[in-house]
Length: 374
Ligand code: UD1
Image (tube, rainbow, N blue to C red):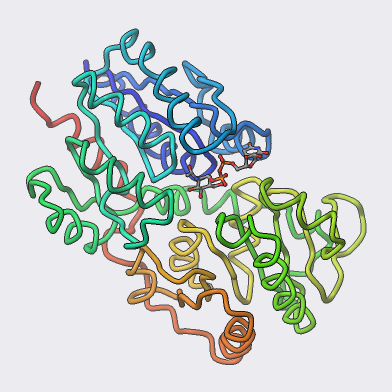
Protein backbone atom coordinates (compact mmCIF):
# COMPACT_ATOMS: atom_id res chain seq x y z
CA UNK A 1 0.00 0.00 0.00
CA UNK A 2 1.46 3.34 -1.07
CA UNK A 3 0.69 6.47 0.90
CA UNK A 4 0.35 9.44 -1.44
CA UNK A 5 -0.02 12.95 -0.07
CA UNK A 6 -1.69 15.55 -2.31
CA UNK A 7 -1.30 19.29 -1.79
CA UNK A 8 -3.95 21.87 -2.71
CA UNK A 9 -3.70 25.51 -1.74
CA UNK A 10 -5.44 27.93 -4.05
CA UNK A 11 -8.54 27.97 -6.22
CA UNK A 12 -6.95 26.65 -9.44
CA UNK A 13 -5.52 23.66 -7.55
CA UNK A 14 -8.78 22.09 -6.46
CA UNK A 15 -10.01 21.02 -9.92
CA UNK A 16 -6.57 19.55 -10.65
CA UNK A 17 -6.37 17.50 -7.46
CA UNK A 18 -9.96 16.23 -7.71
CA UNK A 19 -9.60 13.77 -10.62
CA UNK A 20 -6.44 12.33 -9.04
CA UNK A 21 -8.36 11.76 -5.79
CA UNK A 22 -11.25 10.15 -7.71
CA UNK A 23 -8.81 7.88 -9.54
CA UNK A 24 -7.05 6.87 -6.34
CA UNK A 25 -10.40 5.96 -4.80
CA UNK A 26 -10.63 3.28 -7.52
CA UNK A 27 -7.27 1.83 -6.41
CA UNK A 28 -7.93 1.88 -2.68
CA UNK A 29 -6.22 -1.52 -2.25
CA UNK A 30 -3.00 -0.08 -3.60
CA UNK A 31 -2.84 3.49 -2.36
CA UNK A 32 -3.93 5.66 0.51
CA UNK A 33 -4.44 9.33 -0.45
CA UNK A 34 -3.85 12.04 2.15
CA UNK A 35 -5.18 15.49 1.23
CA UNK A 36 -3.49 18.60 2.64
CA UNK A 37 -5.00 22.09 2.14
CA UNK A 38 -2.48 24.83 2.76
CA UNK A 39 -5.19 27.46 3.26
CA UNK A 40 -3.62 29.87 0.72
CA UNK A 41 -7.19 30.55 -0.39
CA UNK A 42 -9.71 30.51 2.43
CA UNK A 43 -12.89 32.42 1.48
CA UNK A 44 -15.86 30.07 1.10
CA UNK A 45 -16.28 31.02 -2.55
CA UNK A 46 -12.55 30.58 -3.28
CA UNK A 47 -12.22 27.20 -1.54
CA UNK A 48 -15.07 25.38 0.24
CA UNK A 49 -17.48 25.65 -2.69
CA UNK A 50 -14.96 23.70 -4.78
CA UNK A 51 -14.65 20.95 -2.17
CA UNK A 52 -18.45 20.65 -2.13
CA UNK A 53 -18.96 20.70 -5.91
CA UNK A 54 -16.01 18.43 -6.68
CA UNK A 55 -17.10 16.11 -3.86
CA UNK A 56 -13.65 16.19 -2.36
CA UNK A 57 -13.33 14.80 1.16
CA UNK A 58 -12.49 17.26 3.92
CA UNK A 59 -8.71 17.64 3.94
CA UNK A 60 -6.82 15.55 6.49
CA UNK A 61 -4.88 18.69 7.39
CA UNK A 62 -5.46 22.40 6.82
CA UNK A 63 -2.38 24.57 7.32
CA UNK A 64 -4.49 27.77 7.36
CA UNK A 65 -1.69 30.01 6.08
CA UNK A 66 -3.90 32.74 4.61
CA UNK A 67 -2.63 35.82 2.77
CA UNK A 68 0.62 37.74 2.96
CA UNK A 69 3.59 38.71 0.83
CA UNK A 70 4.88 35.98 -1.48
CA UNK A 71 7.90 35.40 0.75
CA UNK A 72 5.82 35.27 3.91
CA UNK A 73 3.22 32.98 2.38
CA UNK A 74 5.83 30.60 0.91
CA UNK A 75 7.75 30.49 4.19
CA UNK A 76 4.60 29.90 6.25
CA UNK A 77 3.56 26.98 4.04
CA UNK A 78 7.04 25.49 4.40
CA UNK A 79 7.09 25.84 8.17
CA UNK A 80 3.64 24.33 8.57
CA UNK A 81 4.11 21.58 5.99
CA UNK A 82 7.31 20.13 7.44
CA UNK A 83 5.68 18.56 10.54
CA UNK A 84 2.86 17.19 8.35
CA UNK A 85 5.37 15.43 6.12
CA UNK A 86 7.13 14.01 9.18
CA UNK A 87 3.78 12.87 10.63
CA UNK A 88 2.53 11.02 7.53
CA UNK A 89 5.86 9.99 5.92
CA UNK A 90 4.24 9.43 2.49
CA UNK A 91 5.80 7.43 -0.33
CA UNK A 92 5.02 10.26 -2.72
CA UNK A 93 3.84 13.88 -2.53
CA UNK A 94 1.89 15.30 -5.47
CA UNK A 95 1.94 19.06 -6.06
CA UNK A 96 -0.07 20.67 -8.86
CA UNK A 97 0.13 23.93 -10.82
CA UNK A 98 2.29 26.92 -10.04
CA UNK A 99 1.05 28.69 -6.94
CA UNK A 100 3.17 29.55 -3.91
CA UNK A 101 1.91 26.43 -2.08
CA UNK A 102 3.19 24.26 -4.96
CA UNK A 103 6.76 25.47 -4.62
CA UNK A 104 6.73 25.64 -0.81
CA UNK A 105 5.69 21.99 -0.40
CA UNK A 106 8.02 20.74 -3.15
CA UNK A 107 10.89 22.49 -1.41
CA UNK A 108 10.10 20.83 1.93
CA UNK A 109 10.04 17.45 0.16
CA UNK A 110 13.44 18.23 -1.33
CA UNK A 111 14.85 19.07 2.11
CA UNK A 112 13.43 15.94 3.75
CA UNK A 113 14.22 13.56 0.89
CA UNK A 114 10.56 12.74 0.17
CA UNK A 115 9.78 11.96 -3.46
CA UNK A 116 7.64 14.62 -5.12
CA UNK A 117 5.69 14.55 -8.38
CA UNK A 118 4.71 17.77 -10.17
CA UNK A 119 1.48 17.78 -12.14
CA UNK A 120 1.43 20.44 -14.90
CA UNK A 121 5.23 20.55 -15.13
CA UNK A 122 7.27 22.28 -17.82
CA UNK A 123 4.99 25.21 -18.68
CA UNK A 124 7.05 28.36 -19.26
CA UNK A 125 6.06 31.94 -20.00
CA UNK A 126 9.75 32.96 -20.08
CA UNK A 127 8.74 35.96 -17.98
CA UNK A 128 10.48 35.79 -14.64
CA UNK A 129 8.59 38.77 -13.28
CA UNK A 130 5.61 36.42 -12.85
CA UNK A 131 5.70 34.78 -9.42
CA UNK A 132 4.20 31.65 -11.03
CA UNK A 133 7.18 31.35 -13.42
CA UNK A 134 9.61 31.23 -10.50
CA UNK A 135 7.38 28.66 -8.79
CA UNK A 136 7.33 26.51 -11.96
CA UNK A 137 11.09 26.64 -12.58
CA UNK A 138 12.03 25.79 -9.02
CA UNK A 139 9.37 23.11 -8.49
CA UNK A 140 10.46 21.36 -11.68
CA UNK A 141 14.12 21.51 -10.65
CA UNK A 142 13.26 19.63 -7.43
CA UNK A 143 10.61 17.17 -8.68
CA UNK A 144 11.35 13.46 -9.06
CA UNK A 145 8.52 12.92 -11.55
CA UNK A 146 7.24 15.55 -13.95
CA UNK A 147 3.82 15.17 -15.57
CA UNK A 148 3.38 17.45 -18.58
CA UNK A 149 0.19 18.60 -20.27
CA UNK A 150 1.57 19.53 -23.66
CA UNK A 151 4.61 18.82 -25.82
CA UNK A 152 6.16 22.25 -25.08
CA UNK A 153 6.49 21.13 -21.45
CA UNK A 154 8.76 18.25 -22.35
CA UNK A 155 10.87 20.44 -24.62
CA UNK A 156 11.28 23.10 -21.93
CA UNK A 157 12.27 20.56 -19.28
CA UNK A 158 14.79 18.82 -21.54
CA UNK A 159 16.34 22.18 -22.37
CA UNK A 160 16.69 22.83 -18.63
CA UNK A 161 18.60 19.57 -18.24
CA UNK A 162 15.88 17.46 -16.58
CA UNK A 163 16.51 13.73 -17.14
CA UNK A 164 14.02 12.62 -19.84
CA UNK A 165 13.11 9.46 -17.88
CA UNK A 166 11.48 11.61 -15.22
CA UNK A 167 9.16 13.33 -17.72
CA UNK A 168 5.77 11.86 -18.65
CA UNK A 169 3.34 13.42 -21.12
CA UNK A 170 0.00 12.47 -19.56
CA UNK A 171 -2.51 15.10 -20.68
CA UNK A 172 -4.36 17.63 -18.59
CA UNK A 173 -6.06 16.87 -15.27
CA UNK A 174 -8.01 20.14 -15.36
CA UNK A 175 -9.62 18.89 -18.56
CA UNK A 176 -10.40 15.54 -16.89
CA UNK A 177 -12.57 17.47 -14.44
CA UNK A 178 -14.18 19.54 -17.18
CA UNK A 179 -15.10 16.41 -19.13
CA UNK A 180 -16.14 14.21 -16.23
CA UNK A 181 -18.40 16.88 -14.75
CA UNK A 182 -19.99 17.92 -18.04
CA UNK A 183 -23.49 16.64 -17.14
CA UNK A 184 -23.35 18.56 -13.86
CA UNK A 185 -22.19 21.89 -15.29
CA UNK A 186 -24.60 21.55 -18.19
CA UNK A 187 -27.32 21.33 -15.54
CA UNK A 188 -26.18 24.51 -13.72
CA UNK A 189 -28.93 26.97 -12.84
CA UNK A 190 -26.63 29.99 -13.30
CA UNK A 191 -28.57 31.43 -16.25
CA UNK A 192 -31.84 31.42 -14.34
CA UNK A 193 -30.20 32.79 -11.20
CA UNK A 194 -28.58 35.62 -13.18
CA UNK A 195 -31.68 36.33 -15.23
CA UNK A 196 -29.52 35.79 -18.36
CA UNK A 197 -30.81 34.26 -21.57
CA UNK A 198 -27.88 32.17 -22.88
CA UNK A 199 -29.19 32.60 -26.43
CA UNK A 200 -28.31 36.32 -26.24
CA UNK A 201 -24.64 37.15 -26.87
CA UNK A 202 -22.56 37.92 -23.78
CA UNK A 203 -18.88 37.86 -22.86
CA UNK A 204 -17.13 36.65 -19.70
CA UNK A 205 -14.21 38.53 -18.15
CA UNK A 206 -11.72 37.55 -15.44
CA UNK A 207 -8.76 39.57 -14.19
CA UNK A 208 -6.47 38.89 -11.25
CA UNK A 209 -2.80 39.05 -12.30
CA UNK A 210 -0.90 41.55 -10.16
CA UNK A 211 0.51 43.55 -13.15
CA UNK A 212 -3.06 44.05 -14.45
CA UNK A 213 -4.86 44.80 -11.22
CA UNK A 214 -2.51 46.04 -8.50
CA UNK A 215 -1.72 49.41 -10.09
CA UNK A 216 -4.86 51.54 -10.06
CA UNK A 217 -3.85 53.37 -13.29
CA UNK A 218 -3.27 50.17 -15.27
CA UNK A 219 -6.49 48.63 -13.98
CA UNK A 220 -8.55 51.73 -14.81
CA UNK A 221 -7.18 51.83 -18.38
CA UNK A 222 -8.22 48.23 -18.87
CA UNK A 223 -11.61 48.80 -17.32
CA UNK A 224 -12.22 51.83 -19.54
CA UNK A 225 -11.63 49.74 -22.68
CA UNK A 226 -13.74 46.89 -21.36
CA UNK A 227 -16.62 49.23 -20.52
CA UNK A 228 -16.51 50.55 -24.08
CA UNK A 229 -16.76 47.00 -25.38
CA UNK A 230 -19.59 46.27 -23.01
CA UNK A 231 -21.69 48.68 -25.12
CA UNK A 232 -21.70 45.89 -27.71
CA UNK A 233 -22.64 43.01 -25.40
CA UNK A 234 -22.89 42.51 -21.64
CA UNK A 235 -19.60 41.53 -20.08
CA UNK A 236 -19.99 39.35 -17.02
CA UNK A 237 -17.14 39.71 -14.59
CA UNK A 238 -16.83 37.40 -11.56
CA UNK A 239 -14.44 39.51 -9.50
CA UNK A 240 -11.42 38.02 -7.70
CA UNK A 241 -11.07 39.28 -4.10
CA UNK A 242 -7.83 41.11 -4.82
CA UNK A 243 -9.64 43.31 -7.40
CA UNK A 244 -13.02 43.94 -5.84
CA UNK A 245 -12.13 46.75 -3.47
CA UNK A 246 -10.39 48.79 -6.22
CA UNK A 247 -13.39 48.61 -8.52
CA UNK A 248 -16.34 48.99 -6.23
CA UNK A 249 -14.97 52.11 -4.62
CA UNK A 250 -14.67 53.72 -8.08
CA UNK A 251 -18.21 52.85 -9.19
CA UNK A 252 -17.04 51.30 -12.48
CA UNK A 253 -19.25 48.24 -12.29
CA UNK A 254 -22.89 47.42 -12.10
CA UNK A 255 -22.88 44.89 -9.25
CA UNK A 256 -25.24 42.00 -9.71
CA UNK A 257 -26.41 39.58 -7.06
CA UNK A 258 -27.37 36.03 -7.90
CA UNK A 259 -30.98 35.15 -7.19
CA UNK A 260 -32.00 38.81 -6.90
CA UNK A 261 -34.83 38.13 -9.35
CA UNK A 262 -33.56 40.94 -11.60
CA UNK A 263 -32.32 40.23 -15.13
CA UNK A 264 -28.77 41.09 -15.97
CA UNK A 265 -28.50 44.40 -17.90
CA UNK A 266 -28.42 43.95 -21.71
CA UNK A 267 -25.22 46.02 -21.86
CA UNK A 268 -22.40 47.00 -19.52
CA UNK A 269 -19.74 45.56 -17.28
CA UNK A 270 -21.51 43.44 -14.70
CA UNK A 271 -19.59 42.44 -11.56
CA UNK A 272 -20.36 39.32 -9.54
CA UNK A 273 -18.84 37.64 -6.52
CA UNK A 274 -16.54 34.74 -7.52
CA UNK A 275 -18.56 31.81 -8.87
CA UNK A 276 -18.27 28.13 -8.05
CA UNK A 277 -16.78 25.70 -10.57
CA UNK A 278 -19.98 24.37 -12.14
CA UNK A 279 -21.59 27.78 -12.59
CA UNK A 280 -18.42 29.30 -14.01
CA UNK A 281 -17.84 26.57 -16.59
CA UNK A 282 -21.52 26.71 -17.58
CA UNK A 283 -21.25 30.48 -18.05
CA UNK A 284 -18.09 30.18 -20.18
CA UNK A 285 -19.48 27.35 -22.27
CA UNK A 286 -22.25 29.50 -23.78
CA UNK A 287 -20.26 32.79 -24.01
CA UNK A 288 -19.50 34.47 -27.35
CA UNK A 289 -16.09 35.36 -26.02
CA UNK A 290 -13.93 35.10 -22.89
CA UNK A 291 -11.37 37.75 -21.93
CA UNK A 292 -8.94 36.69 -19.22
CA UNK A 293 -5.49 36.88 -17.72
CA UNK A 294 -5.79 33.41 -16.13
CA UNK A 295 -3.78 30.36 -17.20
CA UNK A 296 -6.35 27.59 -16.75
CA UNK A 297 -9.13 29.47 -18.53
CA UNK A 298 -7.05 29.46 -21.73
CA UNK A 299 -7.15 25.66 -21.54
CA UNK A 300 -10.81 25.32 -20.64
CA UNK A 301 -11.96 27.63 -23.45
CA UNK A 302 -9.83 25.62 -25.88
CA UNK A 303 -11.74 22.47 -25.01
CA UNK A 304 -15.10 24.25 -24.88
CA UNK A 305 -14.40 25.73 -28.33
CA UNK A 306 -15.08 29.25 -27.03
CA UNK A 307 -12.91 32.12 -28.33
CA UNK A 308 -10.48 33.39 -25.68
CA UNK A 309 -8.49 36.63 -25.67
CA UNK A 310 -5.65 36.54 -23.17
CA UNK A 311 -4.87 39.93 -21.68
CA UNK A 312 -1.18 39.25 -21.14
CA UNK A 313 2.00 39.57 -23.18
CA UNK A 314 2.89 35.87 -22.98
CA UNK A 315 1.36 32.46 -22.44
CA UNK A 316 2.96 29.42 -20.84
CA UNK A 317 0.33 27.29 -22.62
CA UNK A 318 1.22 27.67 -26.33
CA UNK A 319 -0.90 24.71 -27.40
CA UNK A 320 -4.01 26.80 -26.62
CA UNK A 321 -2.90 29.16 -29.40
CA UNK A 322 -1.60 26.63 -31.93
CA UNK A 323 -4.35 24.06 -31.38
CA UNK A 324 -7.00 26.08 -29.58
CA UNK A 325 -9.16 29.17 -29.59
CA UNK A 326 -6.78 31.43 -27.69
CA UNK A 327 -5.15 34.68 -28.86
CA UNK A 328 -2.60 36.43 -26.65
CA UNK A 329 -3.27 40.14 -27.18
CA UNK A 330 -1.59 42.05 -24.34
CA UNK A 331 -3.20 44.87 -22.42
CA UNK A 332 -3.16 47.85 -24.77
CA UNK A 333 -6.74 49.24 -24.68
CA UNK A 334 -6.82 49.96 -28.45
CA UNK A 335 -5.67 46.43 -29.27
CA UNK A 336 -8.23 44.92 -26.88
CA UNK A 337 -10.99 46.87 -28.64
CA UNK A 338 -9.82 45.85 -32.12
CA UNK A 339 -9.23 42.18 -31.31
CA UNK A 340 -12.54 41.82 -29.47
CA UNK A 341 -14.55 43.29 -32.33
CA UNK A 342 -12.59 41.19 -34.84
CA UNK A 343 -13.14 38.00 -32.82
CA UNK A 344 -16.86 38.67 -32.43
CA UNK A 345 -17.02 39.16 -36.18
CA UNK A 346 -14.79 36.21 -37.14
CA UNK A 347 -14.50 33.72 -34.29
CA UNK A 348 -11.56 31.29 -34.59
CA UNK A 349 -12.58 27.83 -35.72
CA UNK A 350 -12.13 25.24 -32.97
CA UNK A 351 -9.96 22.33 -34.10
CA UNK A 352 -10.68 19.91 -31.25
CA UNK A 353 -8.80 19.18 -28.05
CA UNK A 354 -4.98 19.07 -27.94
CA UNK A 355 -3.33 15.63 -27.77
CA UNK A 356 -4.19 13.58 -24.65
CA UNK A 357 -6.66 16.17 -23.31
CA UNK A 358 -9.10 13.30 -23.25
CA UNK A 359 -10.24 12.99 -19.64
CA UNK A 360 -7.70 10.24 -18.82
CA UNK A 361 -4.75 12.23 -17.46
CA UNK A 362 -5.34 11.32 -13.79
CA UNK A 363 -5.60 7.61 -14.65
CA UNK A 364 -2.21 7.82 -16.40
CA UNK A 365 -0.67 9.67 -13.45
CA UNK A 366 -1.90 7.20 -10.84
CA UNK A 367 -0.74 4.23 -12.92
CA UNK A 368 2.74 5.69 -13.35
CA UNK A 369 3.00 6.47 -9.63
CA UNK A 370 1.88 2.99 -8.61
CA UNK A 371 4.27 1.40 -11.11
CA UNK A 372 7.26 3.18 -9.57
CA UNK A 373 9.36 0.72 -7.61
CA UNK A 374 10.05 1.19 -3.91
C1 UD1 B 1 -2.99 32.97 -6.53
C2 UD1 B 1 -1.83 32.38 -7.36
C3 UD1 B 1 -2.15 32.53 -8.84
C4 UD1 B 1 -3.49 31.93 -9.17
C5 UD1 B 1 -4.54 32.60 -8.29
C6 UD1 B 1 -5.93 32.10 -8.54
C7 UD1 B 1 0.43 32.56 -6.43
C8 UD1 B 1 1.73 33.23 -6.58
N1 UD1 B 1 -0.58 33.11 -7.12
O1 UD1 B 1 -3.04 34.37 -6.79
O2 UD1 B 1 -1.16 31.84 -9.59
O3 UD1 B 1 -3.78 32.14 -10.53
O4 UD1 B 1 -4.19 32.34 -6.91
O5 UD1 B 1 -6.84 32.82 -7.76
O6 UD1 B 1 0.33 31.58 -5.70
N2 UD1 B 1 -7.90 36.76 -0.87
C9 UD1 B 1 -9.12 36.71 -0.25
N3 UD1 B 1 -9.67 35.48 -0.03
C10 UD1 B 1 -9.06 34.33 -0.41
C11 UD1 B 1 -7.81 34.40 -1.04
C12 UD1 B 1 -7.25 35.63 -1.28
O7 UD1 B 1 -9.69 37.72 0.09
O8 UD1 B 1 -9.63 33.25 -0.19
C13 UD1 B 1 -7.30 38.09 -1.14
C14 UD1 B 1 -6.27 38.50 -0.12
O9 UD1 B 1 -6.44 39.85 0.12
C15 UD1 B 1 -4.94 38.28 -0.84
C16 UD1 B 1 -5.32 38.46 -2.31
O10 UD1 B 1 -6.68 38.05 -2.40
O11 UD1 B 1 -3.97 39.18 -0.43
C17 UD1 B 1 -4.49 37.64 -3.23
O12 UD1 B 1 -4.45 36.24 -2.84
P1 UD1 B 1 -3.12 35.40 -3.02
O13 UD1 B 1 -3.30 34.02 -2.53
O14 UD1 B 1 -1.98 36.16 -2.45
O15 UD1 B 1 -2.87 35.37 -4.58
P2 UD1 B 1 -3.85 35.33 -5.82
O16 UD1 B 1 -3.85 36.68 -6.45
O17 UD1 B 1 -5.18 34.75 -5.49
